[in-house]
Length: 333
Image (cartoon, rainbow, N blue to C red; front, side, top):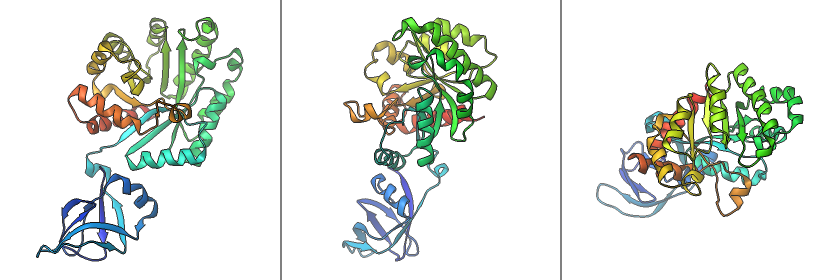
């Protein structure tokens, strides 16, 4: 639930908004407003009719009425202890504008405050930047995914650099090595990865890393860097694996697929071993997963936070707050 400070033109002593009681003086009334009303209030600023379920004056008068005008001022995040959520990895190209507007409105209403739109090749990266321009507030990562790496990409460094210079872009990704899915293209994947690693170093940008079937080789390569900044996306390994990535200075990305298709005792132990100040939450959602059985979308990170919280013995809100602080720190240049 999200708190909001609401001022009514009329003064009442004690009232309940949609069943939630809150005391107030006769000059100003403040209420806790359910999250499903927040997006409507924020968008319109003035809500003309709000059903008040119960009103109690000092003499216990009870009635149902509608308040003609209520202005909403959301409580500052610091007043809420900084509780918010973030999706550090979501593929946003391919949605219709109507779908995107719906996704982002729900994300805002449920306090998913940061959504990183991640590219997978240069065309999709550019498309993601365009999405961010139509829907301000999205942060973008651009890069060439190992699945889509081609020899021609080695000649496209200038275009990649140009995309990285756009104000919407804060990270390089999704990049890395995948010798499980594409074992025969390692001779292309490695130089494309090296090109992007060099740009990350030069531009001081974090990387959203993908690594399958090449853990030792990638870690050996990253150890040669004076510093590495970024996240190991889609983690699904052991506690030892997690520690080896964290030793390089990386955050560990935990998403719903970590907790479902890849979940087991070793993965659970790994998640429990990862300090919350070294973790990011993600969905790896896309239009395909949104419209398919998985139904992944940015708000899915709330369920991820709750599940991780149970493993760590804290609330999902605390997980959300800490992992969002981590993401902000990683993106800071």
